[in-house]
Image (tube, rainbow over all chains, first blue to last red; front, side, top):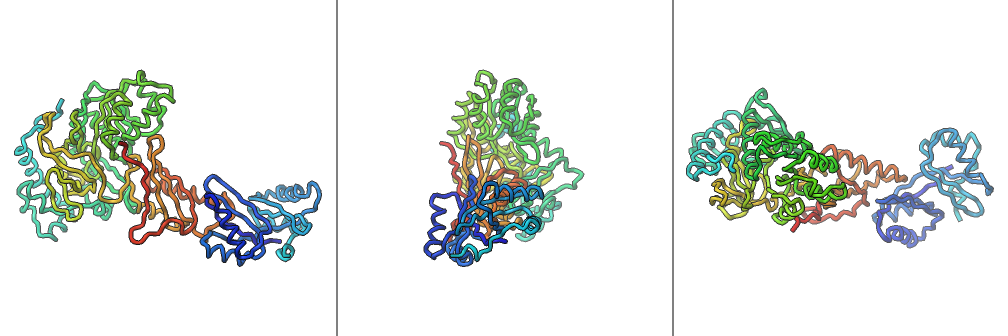
Length: 140
Length: 434
């Protein structure tokens, strides 16, 4: 139901994102999905990678601020309205969404979703029998 | 005009006699009423009877800001609380403020000292004075206020801030005198046109500026921008507040009200007294103060004394404009700030590391504070919202602890330079304007 996501603190400096990416590249870690949240002062790089454990270790060694969070991962039908349908279920349960991003892997459309109340969100996912994605499913 | 010609133009011999008499009385008062001073004097084997004249002052112990902090809130007071009619406080170095108390006589003497300062600046009962120093626990606002009332000015107690209203009342009420920090005076001048005013709308003639260090060139710039005569007023809450010294129309040093506040200059390291013309730490003994009299209080301000008679006719000793400090205290918008206060707040919150870098700058002539704080890895979150909440929480904690608004920027752990020995905690990009 969840996939481990790296959250890396990004100071607002030229080349900073690429420094992180090059550490991952050097250590042969593949990036499956990546999104950057930005504000005027700093950002957060969120990434799904082939080996989160190792990624965290090497980034920490290089002095980056990194944490691993478990984020809901749902499979969407490749049809118009499927993402909207999922979000409707959360909205009607009054669950606030912190952020979402989507990517495709091996022909699957995957929705990563971070909500304010994860217990309620788990219930919604179970009650509506939403298709979930596990980490194994995004391995090569 | 000279407010108190008898005192301000006294011969050196008469002044020394007057100071001697007051010092003897002071030493007896503190020895008998303040445990701290009795212990200090006993420790070095000095009895009140050893003090026979002002020359004996060098036998007395020094007082430091840390002594006031250690005896917070009222441990240094020399009279019972029923005699205290007012308290003021400044923010302290470790979260505890420094408290000072005034008796009726202290308030009257403060008014007298200020009346001399204001008269020195050419101010009289015909003037309308806009007091734009902060009112409240800070001594600036109320201090100047009482002095202006003593002189008989029409006082506008507008306090600090709200630039638009400052300019509106200055125009509508016809203020002839502005009292505030020099940087705020410059800010107000620069805000004239954008608020729809010009100098023709204003009747301002005199500025009494202080509570922060400023240069002679800044004084000339303010005179030009406002078309006024600008004067430097000096003081600190531990000694009294504004009104300890002021410069006259010759701007050749600030005349110290030395019958109330006896100044000495001492070597920053050895603490030995220095002569006229030698720069060192400025030390004051509050000869007449009743509420919280202090012996040889080391201000850590750097200055030079000059006992020669001034061209204005006054004989009172003059101190040079403050050139700097011998410690790490910063003066931000007139508020005293020690870097250790920042550290204290961060440690108390425990949400980040205590590694920080304080960046001080000037924007539109107003001091700005930016605080870089290292994020604690265990507190790393995955939403911007939570990071911003953390910044805001630190900003609020800083604001309530030090009374200044601070912009907080989170930075990565271990990015603030660790240095061997003394860490660099402050980068002050404000240059005293030349």
